Length: 180
Image (spheres, rainbow, N blue to C red):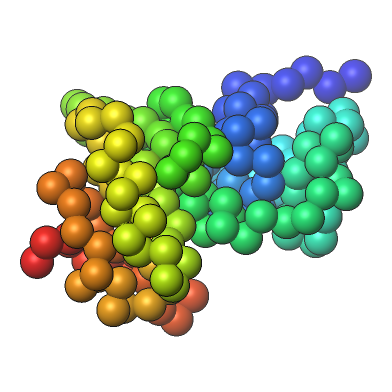
């Protein structure tokens, strides 16, 4: 009989909100907690979760909860999880998903402080709609990360909230400060 470890519970907590993850994302989130947690460690951890029927594999590297096994893959969420993993220095303290206009909101431990972020996916042509939605959204201390597919969107989207643009470049994200 397997007992769920703290690392497995951490990954399951994230998966319950994001609904889908890749093994490399899980490995990255665990390795920032402890550099000794390798990809092999993560693979064993995930295989145990599969045997406990806590996760289901959609592909060799993509997993979800068993209830969502037949649901389509949310590529926008996978991108948002990539950004979350990039911005996490130690541990994701809290997260929520599907809170319009945000795809993913999260708090992450960063040194002696907590970083607060919200990821928004911006489809071409939706820039003005996103700007209007932000105007109506709550005004807290979070930093907005616009997940952008087109570099021109950096010139179109305007907000007084602290923000960055994340643009995919050669399999990784490049981050550009907004308003610059």
